[in-house]
Structure formats: structure tokens, C-alpha cells
Length: 149
Image 1 (cartoon, helix red, strand yellow):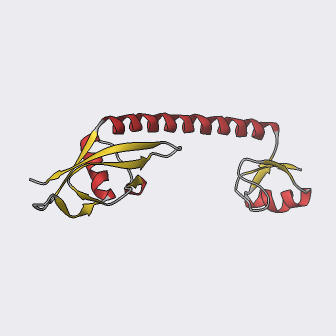
Image 2 (tube, rainbow, N blue to C red):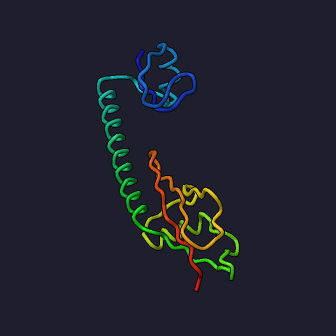
């Protein structure tokens, strides 16, 4: 019996896979539990359509990420912090500070967990951080740390 998996099943296959199973296993377990549907012509066409839609969505997301990357790399993000007389910060610039500055300056919402600071930012001036935008796209962003007025 040929079935299309609707769920990821360990040892059986991943969602969307078309597999051959024994009739009893498919009829008595997979189909009633909702883990699979019969691989009829209509269901196979529906599966092809879903795969094409997912690819289109993935392409749209990748294109959007590329646009955000271009925007982030063109601009310089300014973070205002309290700075001592010797040019050192009280504390350091965090991912949260950078995410809030990006939201304010560029109207782009970036999750703070996607911002990677290579070494702690504890001095005034220009620093580089990496932002992971998903889909394997990473942007190098310039962060300017200035004295809070």
C-alpha cells in the first residue's frame, strides 16, 4: 500500500514522503491516527502543489532577508550608553540594546538571539556585529557607540 506521510515518524519517514507500507499497518494504524493518507492521484497532486507553495514561500522569505541584509549593511546603527571619562562604558552593549536601536532607526525587527557580538563592546566608537537573518544569510552591521546625552 502506498501512503503519503502527514507527520514525521521516526524510523518510517518524514512529512510529505510517499512510502510503501504493509496494508495492515497503513489501514489499521497510519491512516486512522492521521499519520498518513492514501497515495491517490488527487492526493499526489495536492502534495506537489503544497511543495511548490513551500518553495515559493521560501524564495519570498529569502528575498526579504536579502533586502534586510542590504539595508543593515548600508546603515550605521547608533547605540547611546553612559560612558566614563576614560571612554569606557558602564557595563557593555548587549544584543537587546542593538535590537532596540535597529528597531528605532530602521523599523526592522530583529530577534536579539540572532545578533552575534564577537567580543564584548565596552568602549566608545565603531564596532562590527553579525546578524543572522535565516536562510543562511548573515549581515555585518556597523554599531556606533556614543555618549548618552
